[in-house]
Amino acid sequence: MPSKLTGLFKTLEWKHYPVRVENPPKAGQIVVAARTEATHSLDARPEAIPGTKKFRLADTVKADVFLDPKGTFQKSWVATVMPQADRDALLSHEQGHYDIHALLTRDFFLAVMQLKSKEYNGPGGLTADINAAQRATVDNSAAVEAKYDTETATGTKKTEQALWKSMIQSAFDTPASPPQLAGDGITPIKVTLLSVLSKNGFNF
Image (cartoon, rainbow, N blue to C red; front, top):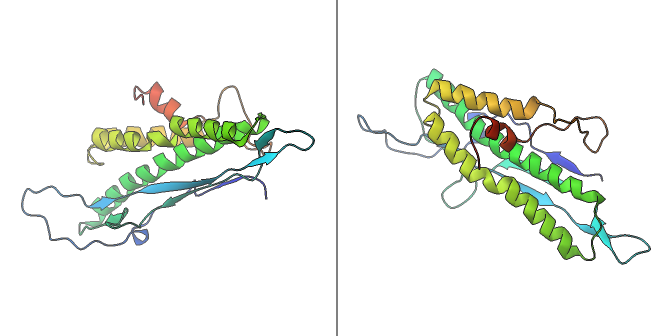
């Protein structure tokens, strides 16, 4: 099967989250009401180039983005009882966490796909290039999401939340310049999330 990225577009709902039982907050106490942990998987393998002793990236790359509810302490969870409007606002903020990691995974996948044109003397060279692509993209996820939480005060600063939502949407929608097409020869490649953030003064 040809290379494929899945999970880039996902609309979060509270039903996707395990419920964590917590005591109601005391007066004036600030508590974390939810946590979103998006993660990814990547399967990229070398193949021998027929008639040579060299290797290349096989066009069977599989990348997947998903909400991770697992782990000893549950990586994604919700523990909140609040008015519906507040729940909606919080879910919108949590959607941003998912989208940030999803976009960085997309950019990782596309960076890996660019390696298809390279030839290697051994599989180790391909592994090194994939690791470099990872460091330039998804390895920044924790730092970007921490900045997102800080700048928006976990979604309570409406102006800042709107700015981050706009930047995220721009990374989803804005074609790269100069124009580039994905492997299907039809779909335009979009600007990277980190480039959008950099243009707005956020560098990682």
